Image 1 (cartoon, rainbow, N blue to C red):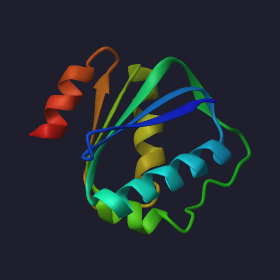
Image 2 (cartoon, rainbow, N blue to C red):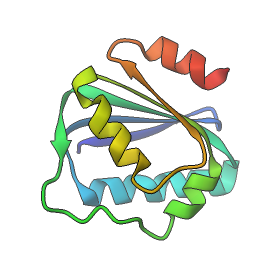
Image 3 (tube, rainbow, N blue to C red):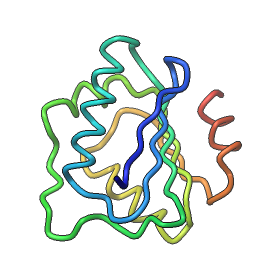
Image 4 (cartoon, one colour):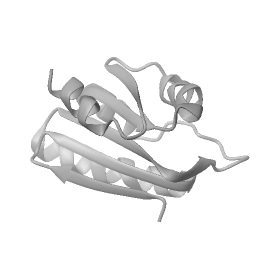
Length: 120
């Protein structure tokens, strides 16, 4: 699996992403996040692009799914940590459907800074 979702306390959702990010895995992760938010309310999100992250699955439609609107309304802030070569691609992917929350990208190995920014 290229996406591992974990929940730290009810407020923090953490995703570790490696390999090629596949549409089916993204959709499954979104459903996990949606279900968590329905129980716990608004959350902070941390995406960690692992050193093995290589890209998005090619030739796939990345349209929104039914839970996306709910998720967008329940994210407080989103931090992405990863190699700087993925910064522009990651931000374009996340901004594809305009989100109503702040997103910040942090270089690899700056997870502590990302967590501090989320908590601010």
